[in-house]
Image (cartoon, rainbow, N blue to C red; front, side, top):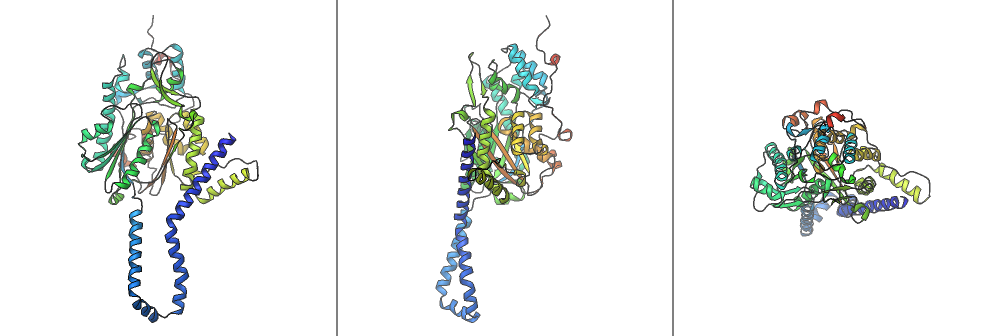
Length: 509
């Protein structure tokens, strides 16, 4: 543990040094120009009269013109080299109809009727569901609500098309952007990757232009949404004056597990139908109506460690049933990935006082061998809203403890888990939509999105609100929270028992 902490601190120190060096190099021309002005100008002004200065300028007109041209060229080069701003114009989250809603008891009953589970597996899933933090109206695809379940490529495609088309239709209607104006499209779905791809599905449905820049991400877990945003950010630096459409979803139909391997049963109790679409732009005129500007993205990949690489894997059990296996070391691996991520993010967002406190504890511990606890930076001093991937109650509890967040900060994540379950990479957008629906977003607020994914990855994005977001307008425009926001939040106990009679799937003898 001590060795791991040392490596984390060492990495954080290198990150800070790299950041300071980068800032120094970027600002070196400005520093030299100001220094030259401060050194040369006062003596000239003090020793020469205005008339003498004018005379000198006329005598050296060619030099003066060349200097002015150089300044203009430098200013142009600086303007061209500046990163293009990336704006979030709007977003949409998918909410299935009432026919797809199921209580926890109904879900357990459906698991039993699906067949294949022994009594021990059914009992385990019931216990997990009681401690999951999920509410009584999460959503399943029609394929898993039928008897028998209908897990095939066609029903999987039906589920994904309903989600993807639903959110993209809503987003285009909200923004009024023509499909032909979109220059970049990125879609991510980890476990279901059909041929043709999701991106081709979107291009075909909306008749996007032939030179569209398209990327389809798969196998990257619940953090793929932030990876897609980071990819879009980089593409928007080289493709001027355009829009980027990012669609994040996951398919439940083909990824329900029907075997009896306990590490693979957990996903049945957590994952639910969901998806989101986000419209980004680098058009400066979009700033006037955009909701947010992307400030930072930080990606951490711990795949070089066998322990991290193998903690979330899709595999077959002894009977040939395919599912996703979660290792008991998942929480520990996630904690290590988070620490690595925040050592890079911290210097970008934290005030100097917090950085100095962190450095002081490192010096005291490493140089003077003092018995002091590592300083955990207070991110609430720099960030106003926290959207933490709703992977499960255990993940949220651990993040709340590690980052010392309040119940108010955790509310968007906990209510997303309660109302929609774990919707994989799209959960971050449900959480941001919750903040908007509650009227929390004010101009200048900073939002931190944190996601974890297989591999193992921890990715972050920081957004700055460009204007206050009107909660009433958000509700009127089709927020997934419109019908629930007035009754939330609700208290979710650590354990919520499920009635055995309601969950019973066995017929009387």
